Length: 125
DNA sequence: ATTCTGACA
DNA sequence: TGTCAGTA
Image (cartoon, rainbow, N blue to C red; front, side, top):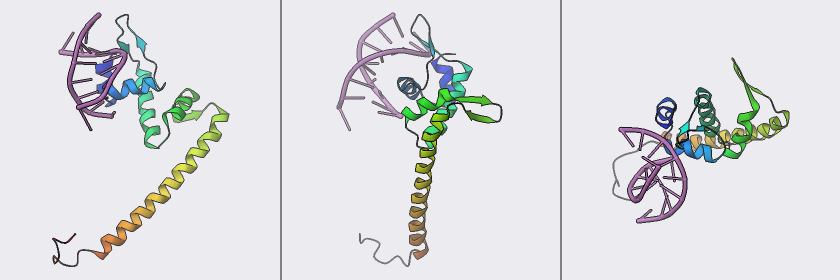
């Protein structure tokens, strides 16, 4: 499939698909015309990229991870033992990020709990 | 009509 | 990441 279908099937826009390729996350074939040709596997790869990106992993790390996972029906199995150590580090980072978000949530809860007392002074900053 | 590369009010 | 340009 070419760019257009890839965009429809992944929900990721053209700009981003080219960017992922630039970052070494995808390596679609090329037609003599220069047009990119994506495979079904690439569609799945983009799904993984989106997930890893959402987890906050830098594209550089994702580029290392993608070629090191075997797709065994149930999920993703690590293939590079050395990389597992780095992933443990990422997991720690995510753990801390969750902690910070919970602190933010707590702050908002406190503000919300205080609730609007009355409409007086609306204009004051 | 589609895709491509490069660039930035 | 969006978007516009100038092509093939």
